[in-house]
Image 1 (cartoon, rainbow, N blue to C red):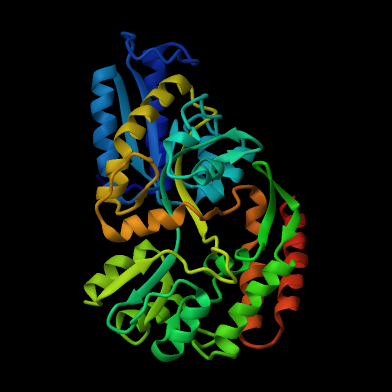
Image 2: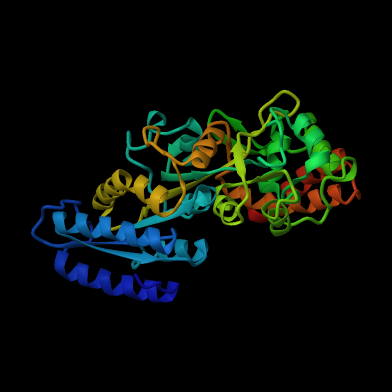
Length: 402
């Protein structure tokens, strides 16, 4: 499989569409795969090259059985470019590997088709949160394929007793060390959530961006815990980065490391005798780490939408093997059996994780959160001020989006 640029992908799609139009004679496309007229579907995938190659095999085999020409294109461009292409006549029919926190942007742009009833239901997945991640205002707009979240790594040679609470972890860490990318809100949100902090209020599946919970009492408690890790307990530097934290753990200098499944291979390669555990409680409550879901969307503007959904069903049937065995990702299917001990732990943590907001207002969250975490950990502001600033600055950011 040759990696193609966005511009080349658009040109290819244009040629494909023109050819298909001549053969079909009908713009609408009735989705009848058994028709004598060969139809064409184009898939753009944001998964890795190896995964794309496997999805391409599935697509080609399905296409041969159903008299459909399926073209799979690897796309590592910006999602805004993908959206612009999807709005054109030459856009893809299916978009694979879209992180769910971008879903609101696709939906607002009118390129995310509503998923047919019954195709995505909570009883099929490891948690209801997987479905919540692809649901906007009560409607499902994407199909989940893989999930990711964060949890706690520990060095078995340094840690003598696996902690059940963050309070115990901190006590042990004063002797063996604890590091993570503390100024990255993707990680630190877990500690705000433990006592009731939240980004946007979830009202029975509908996120309310006017109700921001980053400055409430629970969030401030979490921010104080984060501040104490640096300023009181002296466990890590205020300017620690993800790479530095990872290096501290993989070199055997830190006993605890808060990160995600993407760091498992690095720890193995470093020869560290390590384990992964679900997040210890904080203040008696389980921290809700952020949940990310890699999903797939059918283009609302597709000329062969019914046919695209049939191919999507084939991707669903074969996709869990691909994302797990080829992509080293965490599957979402409840009945999918995994053998890897680390993946099992992350799957358990994912059951209590909280989906990152999937509405367009999520764009207003990241920068204010990161900026105020930096001010907090460097001792320039206190926890209450950090929370208050986050709320005010997120509100201002939302105004800019609208």
